[in-house]
Amino acid sequence: MDFQTLNLYGWLTISSFEKPLENIKNALCENSGRTAIRIEHEILKPKKSDDTTHFSLSSEYGLDNFPLHTDGAQYSIPPRYIILRAKTDSETGTTIANAQLLKKLNLWKIIETTTWIVKTDIGNIYTSLFDRHIVEGCEILRYNKQIMRCLNNKKKSEQVEDAIQNLPIETINWEKNTTLVIDNWKLLHGREQVKDPNYQNRILERLQIFI
Amino acid sequence: MASNLAYDYHNLYNKSKLYVQRALDEDREGELFPFWLSLSLELLGRSTLSKVSPTLIAETKGEESSNILYALGFETTNKPKSISTTLVFQRLYLIINELKNEAKTCERIIDQRNSELHSGLNGFEEFPVSIWLSDFYRICKILLKQNGLELSDFLGEEEAVAAEKMIAHDVSSVKKSVMDKISAFKKVFSDLTQGEKDEKIRTAKSEVLKHRRNTKPIKCPCCEENAIITGELISISEPKLLDNEIEQEKRFLPISFLCFCCNLKLNSHAELKVVEMGAQYTLKEILDPVEFHEIDVEQYIDIDAVVNQRMADEYAAQMYGDD
Image 1 (tube, rainbow over the protein chains, first blue to last red):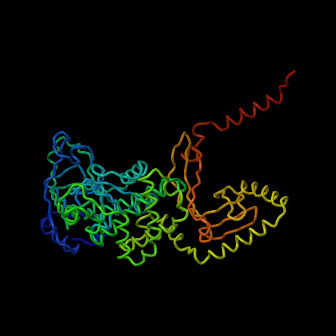
Image 2 (cartoon, each protein chain N blue to C red; image 1 turned 90 degrees about the vertical axis):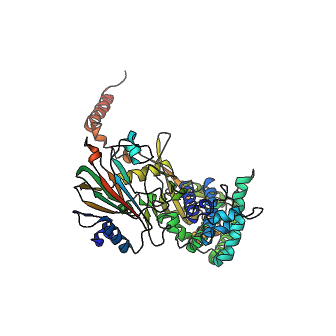
Image 3 (cartoon, rainbow over the protein chains, first blue to last red; image 1 turned 120 degrees about the horizontal axis):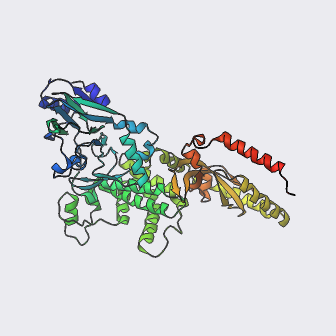
């Protein structure tokens, strides 16, 4: 695995069925110098908003595009890595954006001072978008506008939201067995609108690695 | 992070950071600026103590053990109580040596905050922020350092630069020279004849009007007539739409003072602090909407046609005369 690319850019793709997911997970933990304390394994399929009963991005956005977000913002410590593997070919791409680019904007002086409230598994917590105090020596990106609210004034909130949604994006197109590794503490990701009428054939296998 | 969120260091710190940002978004000369600062200081103190141990902020008076156990992560209460802010800081003085020197200021800020929240009195009226703002920043710096943080983490880069300047200007070394200077100028001014004084007062009024850009008019501590302070720009607020006007605030750190009447000059922030003129000030600016929105007027108006019409009107006016 090309850890240099992953550490530099926050993501990488593996185009063919090179390694079992378990091996990728182990390599990631070794690279980070930490052990995995929890793994969440799920099969993802697009859903219409009416077809899902629990509160999620699908329940709000259905087959529309998912806005840029990090996974697991509702956890006190979000997962570090997300591994996505395509079980089928799909025209609906996954979008990724480097949130570190926000630090280069003039707006950064506003972004860095915002405080957000987020509903987590242990209650509501106050957080920054880039939090350096939860895990020593690490900066954790946390953003999901569905469950987070900016507590500074409305204008700052809108400015931050615009800045995030206007970040340049890369689109990952899915061929069967393509694997995408995302550093969820650095990168935002989203999903394109699902236009394929056979949308249920878009199947991704996801591992969320908590370290 | 345990489930004791009420006492959790991160939650308390992030809330403190939210409150200081609310303060910084306010008019620096308004009443809410010191109010939000005082709330922020309380929470920063609590977060610092909580980082040592959350049990240190749990109230134990009259309670069996529910608050202490909550602090340790047990769900023993859904209404956890905390110790008073005074006790928070008393414990912090024992832990952080440097903070002991700031005890008097901490207590005064807390008292004014209590007065504002719990009484019919106007807190901070007798203790204006102009006196204690640099002390506030210095106290925050000490508490943040204890948590492995810096002023820029708390205030943002721009405000942290101004805060560091305010902290760096030590008043004690210049106090005597400033007071001596004021006495000397006071004597010179008082020795003038009434006619000479009146002339100087008249001149001072018009000079203040000529020097309006980025300055604030103020009463001279020596002759009590019209003077100005000039500042260094700290930050500019985001533009706001108010009553069909686009308004923006510029915030300044005072760095010099000049009286056009008695000619007293003070040349540094430290000197200004001695006479309680060190507080940041705000100037409001109305922005031209055409410039602000970068409107290309020529997209909407044919300038040549307007000019030609204007010239034709003027020519017609010259040619026509009333009988």
